[in-house]
Length: 154
Image 1 (cartoon, rainbow, N blue to C red):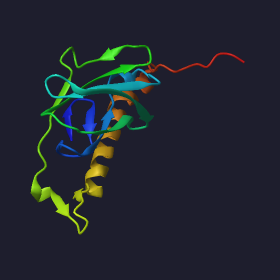
Image 2 (image 1 turned 90 degrees about the horizontal axis):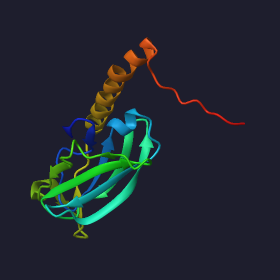
Image 3 (image 1 turned 120 degrees about the vertical axis):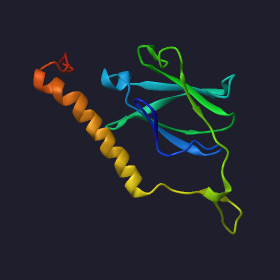
Image 4 (image 1 turned 180 degrees about the vertical axis):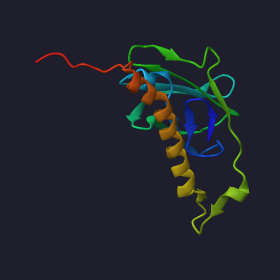
């Protein structure tokens, strides 16, 4: 699910008490930041405030977060230089929905299991991200306007 430019989730709905994977391909991914931290909370007052380091992958910076409570999932991001991406001072805010019983299967042990995403859906997200990267970076490579990191030292 893409609700905002450069922020992707591995599910079509954010459901309370589930784990969601977030992929971020915003300005910190584009400018070559080495570390990105997601600073997040729930509800209007940012309850259960936490911050974790996201993992850098070829698909962007990624993290898995349990949606603990509240009616919204709020976050902003910072890099290792303490620069912030807070969605132009609006923060990233997404609604959290209650678990619908149609999406839950109850097994013999009475543990709830949420449905898994189909492989086709996951591949469609990967393809969309690859197309985005091609559109963004190929013109820079062709024009020679692409920043390369030059290692110095011994």
